[in-house]
Length: 323
Ligand code: 13P
Ligand code: SF4
Image 1 (cartoon, rainbow, N blue to C red):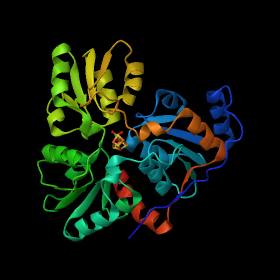
Image 2 (spheres, rainbow, N blue to C red):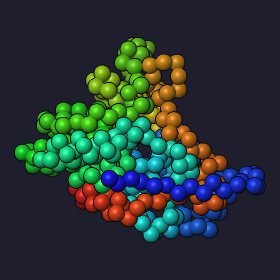
Image 3 (cartoon, helix red, strand yellow):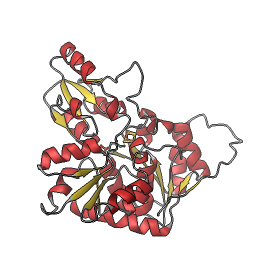
Image 4 (cartoon, rainbow, N blue to C red):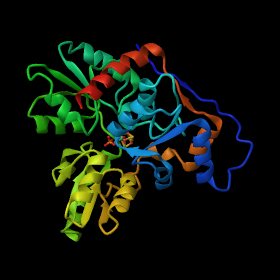
């Protein structure tokens, strides 16, 4: 069984933060020959210092092609881990090593290995939101932006096991018209949206288009005019003639939507309770301060056993070739 290991030097932060954090981050970037890659669900101040912002596919592509010696990954663990899988010789830093993912956690390697063993004739297609151990047991990786495209390229007679997100899996089944054996994982953020409150919000904003991420539950997706990855949602919001949108994904993306289309209105889809639980608690563990410290101390760093890395690399390379 493969397991991942983390190395975290919890060095003492004896000195205080510089007054101009952003200038100091830019200086460290030059000093380290570093690139900052950030996901749209990061805090706006992190998005604003990033060299590249993107969805999981875009970030993986950037990680695969960067010339930088150090990759500072402002995202969650599985994303930084993917960057390390693609770049064993580079240092990959994650501002907070506890920035995990409920979806990745919903697919423990031992249970998944047993499930896979029960279906030896199935090809394993795994969503990139999983650990390196799960990637190492997969045949092809996909992201929310290429899942339909990748499954469509697989021979129709080939049975497919799709993990770990059952909502993305159901969406791919609908789009491709084929049966997939689904691992029953979910994202704690995307399953929190309330259909009832969404419908109420639509009555208050009848001209607003609902746009949603495919990790949402089917009850929410059926109200969406457009479904796509974070980058796809951002592009759609820019290009659509509509001037108002109800956005059913983590609201961090609204920072870029608002920048790209300042005259349009973006309304976050409401969660079930009176909470901020549509914000990803894992993504939001990263802060600008932690990003600075990670660059300053060159820690926490992502490390992986080489046999896991190599096994996980193959299905990622297949994805990059197929998308
Ligand atoms: P994408 O950015 O690929 O759409 O993924 C969303 C997500 O949940 C990342 O954790
Ligand atoms: Fe994981 Fe969901 Fe957070 Fe994305 S939004 S990192 S899938 S918990």
